[in-house]
Length: 165
Image 1 (spheres, rainbow, N blue to C red):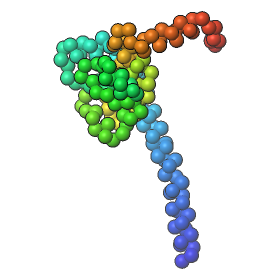
Image 2 (image 1 turned 135 degrees about the vertical axis):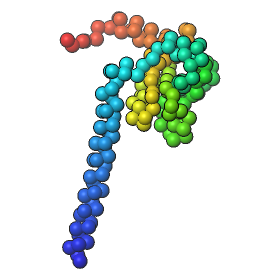
Image 3 (image 1 turned 90 degrees about the vertical axis):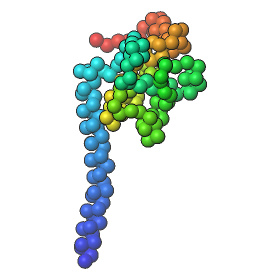
Image 4 (image 1 turned 90 degrees about the horizontal axis):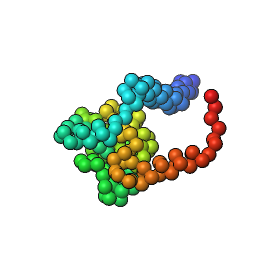
C-alpha cells in the first residue's frame, strides 16, 4: 500500500511539473504559427489612407480601437467610430467582449509603437487584428506623436551610432 501511495505521489508530482512545460510549449507553438504568417499577410498593417477610405465609403467590416494608454487623449480627438481600450487592458475578458470576432480590428496608438504589443496575442485568439502604420501621428495633423518622431529622427541624424554590416 505504501508503495502505491509513493507511486501515486511521484506520478502526481511529475504531472504537476510537466504541465507548465507543455503549456509553455503550446503557447510558443501558437505564437510561432501566427508569426510565420506575418510577412505574407503584410505584417498586419494598414495605412491611415486605407482607414479613411473605409470610413468615407461606409465600409462596416472593421473596428478601430484606440489603444493609447491615456483616456484623455481619446477625449481630445480620435478616429471617427473608434472605441478606446488602452493597449495594456485589451486582453481583459470584459474588453475582449467589445471586439467583434467577425470584423477587422485596427489598433492605433500615438506613434505606431505600442499598438504592436497586442496584435499578436489578438491574432492567436483568432481576431483579424491589424495596426495602423504610425498610429495617430499619421491621422491627426500636427499631432504630438508626429512631433516626437521628428525629434527622434533629428536627434539620430546628429549622432554617429555604430552600425554593423
